[in-house]
Length: 120
Image 1 (cartoon, rainbow, N blue to C red):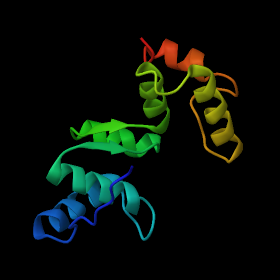
Image 2 (image 1 turned 135 degrees about the vertical axis):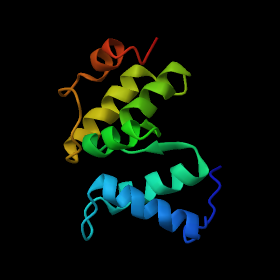
Image 3 (image 1 turned 60 degrees about the vertical axis):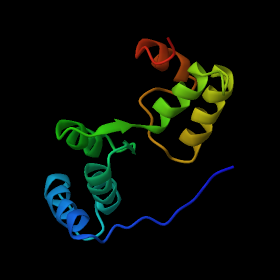
Image 4 (image 1 turned 30 degrees about the vertical axis):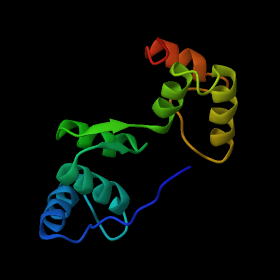
């Protein structure tokens, strides 16, 4: 069962962090608002930022945040035996079919994850 909670994101600390991260992420209008918000929240409260945008991930990691992408989470699930590699591959290909950009070709999840040592 998933627990959901509303979290406070309008404290002065979080708003100041949002300003810092907005500058780092190149926030303009609606561009990068999600990544900026995630990074500001994690900066203030800790945790792992889950995002796939390569440029935003690089900025977040450069500034000391722990970042994980969708495929990394999928590999984690395989390593814990919560998901099979075959099922993860099918899901990855399905995500590709919806337009998600992935760091490997269709059918390449397992090879990519093994090369990246994510399944060991």
